[in-house]
Length: 326
Image (cartoon, rainbow, N blue to C red; front, side):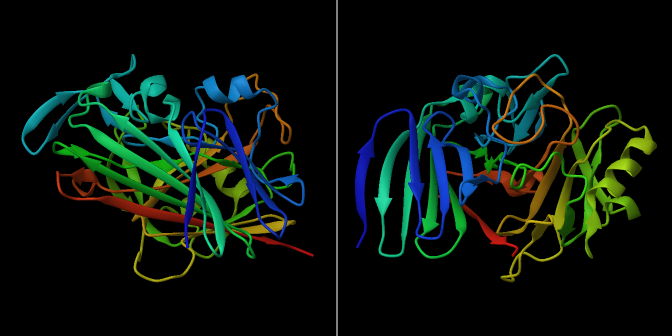
């Protein structure tokens, strides 16, 4: 049996019987904090107002389309001008006008084996330049007896549009100073190709050695190699296409000396981003500088796979399993 109770705007907390606790925000349908036995798993800004307004999307739902799009796009032979920055690109669905900064309505949901929150927002036709009224539902569940965070994204539209919604949590496990010592595994043989001078993805290629995480690779080694390339970026901010999406194996594994994070998803790719921006944000955990955290952003690739038409339901799931080391 499922019970639902409406909630007002603000921050809401759910936790299970195993020590996993999450605090959510109606603004951006976001995860403000995630902790196990009182120890933070993701970057948590000390100031909640900073969390709500920061341009770094801490733990927020990002869309309508996560990542970068050209300022002018074609959807089924119709042209649309998107809300763009000075670089002419639409970032994360329209920057501070995208889903990450909209106030969602919420319902607390109790099931027999889990407790969760369902957030809903109706984006009007033309918001940030995207066609169609888009109804977005973001659901978070924590099973009562296992340490997992389950995220479900669902959307419907009134016109042909494009959708690729994801979450933007920054993993910093149990207040580590940085992520240099983390080992990352990604089951992918292809990586996105950038348009020259930008981070706009325009194709894919076989992963180079320093981005080949199939058998696990120390993040420091990969990040050092990226910096030596002196290309368009100086950190890990790359899209990886999964080799398989049908099996039930974790697509991404992130391991520190203290815990292992397993990411299961039915999305066909993931963007991985190591935050090195050194912005003046103070956190309850982690450092305000250096390679302070990594964002795991499962999403849809390529562009044609992101088209949603009336009558269809966009539906994808991300599941994080947290395994604490003894």
